[in-house]
Image (cartoon, rainbow, N blue to C red):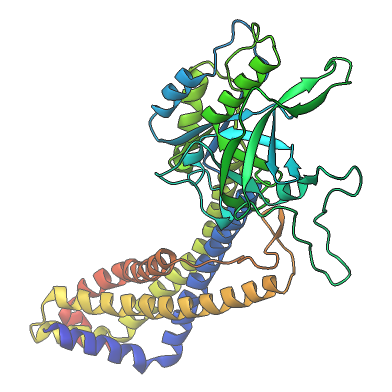
Length: 457
């Protein structure tokens, strides 16, 4: 018997008993729908948690804190940074060097800036997720005197010709317009001067003036960074410059002001390490701790337990859906067994006419597989509809509680996500359930005696 004939007979037999077939297919629809929607809930919750955590900080960054240094501590210096860069799956490393607040002044005409200045690895800023709202990040043509300004830091410029009302604040006026700062670093000329202390610093009576021992250094601002508090260090209220340049300026300041640096260690207080992906964060963090730095922090300490919780929730939800599909499988088995009882004489005639036993088995398996396939297709269609309705409900600002997690599904997030692999997997699974459910009835059909079957009324 040809495949075309077997498939035709199978479909014909299914649609002869429309009500029973539709009821059986409905069971598969419900089962497929249940497992897809349940798993999609788990995926949606996982995505929501990852989005929330990404808002808290980059999931692939490990922070090394080295504040409480002792003479016995492992130095976190340039040599150690080179070792950290050599750790497998490390993409970028940057120290965070904080320049003394009174060490230098950035001038633009009569306007001066004496705020936070960080020394970082400027070429690695893009790897750490820093962005600019104007200009660009440093590239291969980076020069030592290139800097980046934080947007809020621009409002720290003050008018040196005034003693009061000498600053502009980033507050909207009556029309809602935020005034421009005194200085546009992308257009105005900038120069840096090293400060010379006047008075007694310990008694708090010191003042700073531009040192006459050093010539002003011309600066070039290549970009303005937005306020992003998820980064460390945060760029909003700071100026970024290359770490080697910042250290050079600090050394010149110490020399001019006779600052005793005998007991000052060359270690960095903080270093940021970028891993290749989330999967390697734990491995990179362990390697860093093995170098002697126990005080490390990454989002892995939060992400891992949540990921395990999400996996448990997905398994529970998937299991609930699988139970529904199991019930549907029993329905398919019952339908096929009933079909065999009703078609016993037909089976006997086919055997007497010389039909191959394997063809009879295949015919019943095709019927069972068709029920599973049709139920899978329609179940997927209903699943997408239910998913759309749930996400629309969540988009309206309604909170959804699932698995003990409250608040998942707030405005702008999808509670139910059906990826392609889930849809395809559900369709294959439903079809396989149909075939497996039909295997026993199909074997039962081929074992029926031809003579006994012909005598069946």
